[in-house]
Image 1 (cartoon, one colour):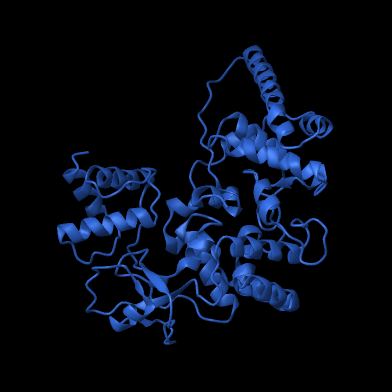
Image 2 (spheres, rainbow, N blue to C red):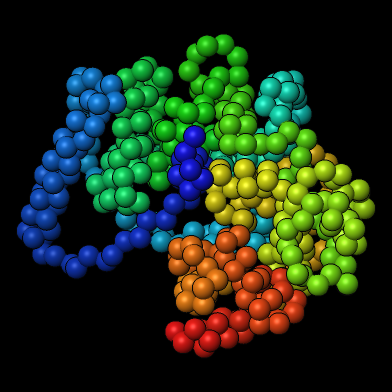
Length: 412
């Protein structure tokens, strides 16, 4: 099994990868033709350079030549937005876009239509059927929105540009392996502009590792079969560590007496401190949970479990994982979020997020990447800083005032 960061990139998150582009200077027609011809030649040389790697992976020369024949770089990829919605809007905004009444209704219809297969898939994997349906809904709107791009062309272009190191070169070879083994035809290799395929939005390596047929021994058809797609999503989550019987998270009410000294405890400890569920149902009796407060202490709060982080292995965004959980909850007939979002909630810019991470690194509280994307490691570091500085509530939430205070203290 691969490490977390790599594993997260090989599934549906690939459909959301942002590719930055630099504006090219305008050229005269003759210069433009010469530049295009030169690029085409370089691209063909790059494709040929892949052969030793493909051969080592068991791909025949005939398969390789057929696959690269006529391939040209996909210029449209370079015009895609350089910002990912999950990291540039608030969780509340992302939820409003992802968990709509229409999508909830569609999800309930899919769950009812496929009740029998879903029951079997849940029994095999331990993953609740509503989670599977929710991921299918968010990834491809329950099937029809898998994308129409030529996957090999997309992956070759991204590999040629050396986007994300060798990731897309490896994915291109994985696509060739799919062809070599007869799992798909060349016409099957269509999907998103970032190389993800079918209803679950798997990259080729994810298909090779996790795609399974619902019934029978045939290769999984994640393009036109909902049951194969759902079985494959379940296989991904199960192999990524899904704990059967453990909820992904529960919305809770934070007691007034809570001092925010620790954001990680067992459910029994949370209950002893006065936490209760927003729905009025009992807290789980076993297991550990992290207090997740994406809008700070004034907004909704969840106790999230290891299964929340399993969902994040499908897509590394907190907003994505919360959206899957809340869509699943409503597909299952439960209510939405009980605590309202703060009306003054604004998204944290990537630049401010990077400043916070750089400051926390300089203060010895953070060791991750300064990429501006706020996840558990950054929130833990913010929480540690708040505790050290005597800031209450020490909720790990980044406000504009906190950005400026950290910037000043770290002398950035």
